[in-house]
Length: 96
Image (cartoon, rainbow, N blue to C red):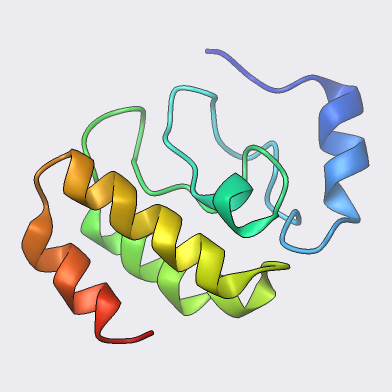
């Protein structure tokens, strides 16, 4: 399993949107950096596999915790479109 360093986790925990950094492996796709949150936050895949709708909706629901919620949502939409999940991307775009 590919994890983040202890130094990265410790530094990220106190940043806005970074409370869950370190709970997931680097194999996942994270939307956090697109919203100004630390790397390793707001995962949108599960176990490094394809897009997980539950994870995506959780990231959307919690996007208000990111420094730039709109940027986070745009990052999620971009990744969804890249992976061919246009219907889900349209659904999220309607929430903006």
